[in-house]
Image (cartoon, rainbow, N blue to C red; front, side):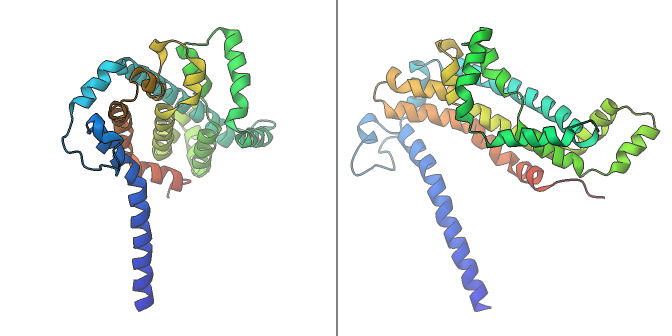
Length: 274
């Protein structure tokens, strides 16, 4: 009994320390965003500002056009998320419920592509988009990311866990493949779809390298790219940079805080009960 209690205390202590280490950068970011310029690089570090400077947030918005960056991020995130959900639903249905020659081999090949580092594909993708004349456009920011092998795999596993009797009953009632997918499978796969959508939103919102490569004009920058340019546009005003970072991170933190249960449920469940 004593050993069990001590083990729980040790586990919770380690988890608490890990949580504090994870939260520490966010605390420092918020603290720096509210500091005066002379306190940002002070030694020893100042954790609590002597004077809270809320105007840092308004100054950050004036230094760089974050309103435009915010709109670009919303457009790219929403459109690419919708596109990935559509492609994942259709592909997962084909690989799980439809029978055609070479289905399993093709799916294995697709899974194999997940082992290829994304950095290897940057140059070929850039050359392809350049030949299409899509560089520095929304097409380059969105179209290459409207399909994901991981999303297809996750949704396929969820579809495979659905009882085959559902398909048989639907066919007896004269329901075609598309109606069966849209009216039966998609509603039942809601947890997995929510998970895919949330992961895609987080990934698109935080994407930095690809938007940096394929955009040249200031009008097409997304928020992460806008932050990278902020150091040159704002000089050494780190308090303004941290204020802008707080505004960028806040929507994702709120989204994850309210939807973390759905993310865990969608990843952990591989089918439906019953």
